[in-house]
Length: 408
View (cartoon, rainbow, N blue to C red):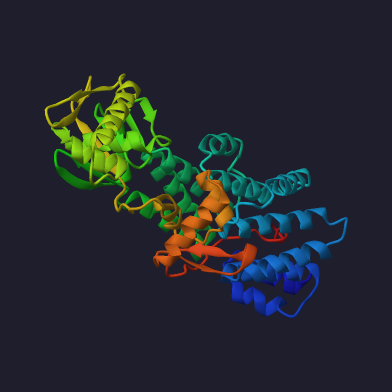
């Protein structure tokens, strides 16, 4: 490795993308192309970064399998940052195996973390937990340890284990400080904000208040009967009854939960469950059928009784009933799409379809409707088209180097 390549790699390791470009901007050899690609990714030009890394991968010779594997891993991270979840997980797994076989444990661990972050994005928490359990963080560099602890914290946050999440973020902060890379420190700080920002809204006894994530964890561990409008389920301690695929039943359950200990008039239930403004005997008959279905579904935790003017919820063992809702609820049938775009990153329609478990055409219709309402916007064309909530966010990522530095 010549002196300019070494200097550019060191600049990238310190987070100085412009310093790296000054050293290799005019070079067309494979190592320089790879470094330029990583620098462009750190500066936010992901399209050019991806093209440079692909050129670098082609220019590395057939015997330079490790260098080509590192380029594949770098491309995978660019795809992850740009929320292109359709990239080949098989290619990333093959690259990781190559790196492990040749003793490049740091970059192999980085590839493993990318796999886990993708699993988190598409909601496969159990797979993410099993995968992270097989990663030994002790031999990793400070930058890689930071990435590892951020993944651990991300899993803990989604599992509502706030104590574990705070411990992981404290370890990530120490590792980022040791690495001395400002972008890493900023990423840790952004993750910490998730624990100090309202995560839900509690609706109970006719009142509302915002809850932090640890408050949500405590509420779900209590004896209360919880109507969870964040995950569309009803629960009490360890018993969870999912209603995500039965929106009418959940709408009735939520209306009953918000009114507890009182009842809900039939006309109000009809409006909440069916959107009916004018009702007749057929609507009321349908309501009785749906209430009967809900009664059977939740009978292990509560009963639904008829009153003179409507229906009321009566928990069997819970001392109170509460509703957990999102801090700011987005009305309309496309709220789930907006919820994913609220993370500030850009998403492709195919990635949203994968994360939501819906068809790409359904997601595209939702995006078109939201764009017409001015709630989202897109940039790029064709397969490169990405969707964001305005304004268009910047991209910040930490990418692996194409080769280990001397002395690492």
